[in-house]
Each structure stands twice: as structure tokens, then as C-alpha cells.
Length: 291
Ligand code: HEM
Ligand SMILES: CC(C)=CCC/C(C)=C/CC/C(C)=C/COP(=O)(O)OP(=O)(O)O
Image (tube, rainbow, N blue to C red; front, top):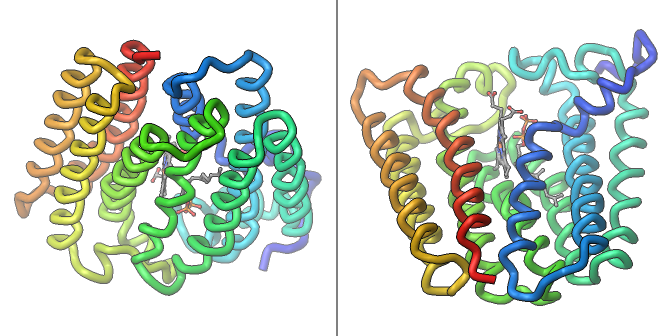
């Protein structure tokens, strides 16, 4: 176990511990949720929501890296992280993760509201103590991990409304379903890496064919949930058309993968498309919001 650091951790190592690119994307979905909710909020509430969410997500990511420090050493993708490489001690990562997670709670509870703080705690705890250990036991962990991943846009919504009403829950559904093809594409092109680390992912448990089918069915559910935003009155026709086109491209590319010859290159491109898709979907939502 890499518990003793060989060098003093640098600022860059603390930043790496927060998974900054994923955290940034999570913040985009949280800000989106807040902008789409009917009541207008003050700039102070927006800043408090973003700071509190950034801290609670970063804390969750740091604690995930603390718990997975031995597993991360076995995977090509993760072996250069601060803990497996020995640049930071496990104790430092644990304290950093706990401190910023705990600090986020009063920021969200006092600066935003109790419902948003509660959702943040639920997401942090379910990611760290639910999804993270389950990865070592079952490929179903993905569906557990998709719950905390879908909570931030709902937190943005409740920051404005203080209620989990249909609009916020529709955004939750969009993020929930988006994560399934997002991760199954990764699991396909990294299946050997996951097998080496002893982690359960769908391609290694149910097979590549079943995984491709699952990508298609969940992309279908994703498209349905994005279209639901329109009748709920959250965004207008321009959004509806954009969501439909983006979704058709997603489904088309996912279906192209059903060919036997579609391998890692296809899966990697689907993963990259999933990121571009989410950014463009939220741009369309923000540009055509009905509030
Ligand atoms: C069950 C849920 C999720 C799982 C298991 C998952 C897993 C992963 C993994 C393993 C990578 C690294 C891919 C690689 O380079 O090989 C990744 C990348 C990424 N994920 Fe996810 N993810 C999930 C949810 C989310 C959520 C909720 C967001 C944000 C809304 C997100 C945003 C991103 C972004 C932006 C990247 C590319 C940047 C980077 O690799 O650091 N993911 N994801
Ligand atoms: C408000 C709040 C706390 C929200 C949680 C948001 C969050 C952390 C979303 C990411 C979801 C997720 C399962 C990522 C992959 O983890 P992984 O362990 O599979 O990734 P890794 O293998 O790269 O460590």
C-alpha cells in the first residue's frame, strides 16, 4: 500500500485528487439546473451553490481516490495519480477529502438551503460508501454510481426552488441515463485494464454484445428524458430540435457499434461524443430556457 509519500505533495496533486475535469462538468450541470428553475436566484446564492457543490464533489472524488489507492496502482489509466505514485500519503488524501466534504455542508445549508445540502450529502455518501466499494463486487455498481452523478443538476434546481419537483427530476433522469452509455463505452475500450484491477464491468461480466445492447437501450431512455423537458415547459422548440438531433446522432453512432468489427476505436469515439453531447445539450438548454 502506498501510504508513505516520498515527496511533499504539490498543489497540482491536490487538484488531481479532485478529478478537475469531471468536477467542472458536474458544475456545468448544477449551474444548468439552477438557471432552468422557475424562480430567479441572486448571484450570491449562485456562487454559494457552485462553491458548495465544487467542494462536496471534489471531496467525494478525493475520498474515492483514497479508498481505491491500491486498485489505482493496477490500472494504466490511474497509476500516475498522487496516491499510487507515492507523491501523497493516504492520510493526507483522507484528511483533504473529509475536510472539504464537511466544509461544503454549512456552505450549502446556510448559503443555499437545507434540501440542497441534504442532496449533496446523499450524493457524496452514496458515491464514496455505495458505488466505490460495490465496483469491486458487481458491474451493477454503475447504476448505483449514476445516482450521485445525476444529483448535481437537481441540486442546482433545488437551490432555486427548495423542492424536488418534476423539472428537477427530469434533469436528474437526463444525467442518470447519460452516464450509462458514457461509462459502458469507457468500459469497452478499457476492459483489459479493469480486469487487471479486479473491477467488475459489464463487458467482462455479461460480454461485449450485451454491453452494446445496453448502450443502445439506455441511449434511447436518454433521448426520451431529454424530450420530456419540452412538455414540462423548461425549454422551447429550438432546444427540442437540438436535443432530438444530438440524440439521433448518439443513437446512430451507438448502433453503428453493433457491427462485430466495431472495437476500441469506435468505443473511444462514442465516449468522446458523450462528453460533447452533454456540453451541447446544456448549451441548448441555457440558450432556450423558458424562465
Ligand atoms: C457512473 C457514473 C460515471 C462513471 C463510472 C464515470 C467514469 C469515467 C471514467 C473512468 C473516465 C475516464 C475515461 C478515460 O479517459 O478512460 C471518465 C471521464 C469523464 N467523465 Fe465520467 N463517469 C461517470 C459519470 C460522470 C458524470 C456525472 C460526469 C459529469 C457530469 C462525468 C464527466 C466526465 C468527463 C468530463 C470525463 C473526461 C475527463 C476526464 O477523463 O477526466 N462523468 N468518466
Ligand atoms: C454532489 C456530489 C458529491 C456528486 C457526486 C458527483 C460525482 C463524483 C460524479 C461522478 C460519478 C462517477 C461514478 C464517476 C466515476 O468514478 P470512478 O471511481 O469509476 O472513476 P475512477 O476509476 O477514475 O476513479
